[in-house]
Image (cartoon, rainbow, N blue to C red; front, side, top):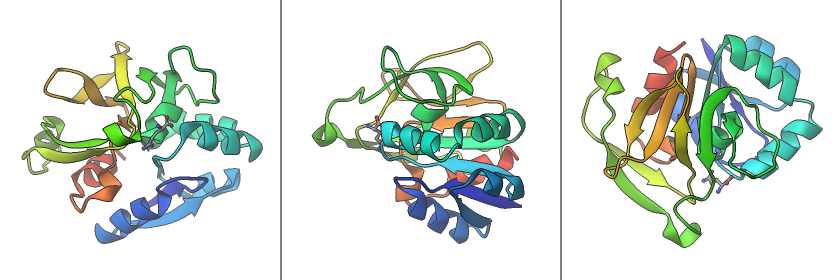
Length: 192
Ligand code: GLN
């Protein structure tokens, strides 16, 4: 199995380190043909408008949409925004693959970034340790609403949605690549 990490902008190097730590073969993806040799793709956090603009310039939008209709994609933070089909009134290139509505920068500016513990019920079903997950939110988006095909994976204590899954598509508002807790990487691999 080989996992690609979209390497246009943002935290792609950190995801590659996480994948190496769990012993999964990985590669950087910048060109459409590189999608042919991978079984799943991670779209990292960063700046979703920049990722969208570069994906447009590199003719990646359609190939990514085709890939996501057949294979697994996990978007973290800006990557989750890019996977969504609605950025609530903001016009920017997105893949529209997941039926989730995203509120960008929902927690305020960069200084309002925070860390918190999250319950993730799906972990135990996948054979992973069920302990709360320490999540890092950096000028994070919120998953404001999900469609009928979408399963909520995690919520903040006030009920707001921060992780969701639609088949083999996974979206998280936070940054698992910035911790050494690899359970989200392992969970993503379990979807493939
Ligand atoms: N605020 C960024 C955006 O809207 C996302 C931040 C992140 O990926 N950490 O694209």
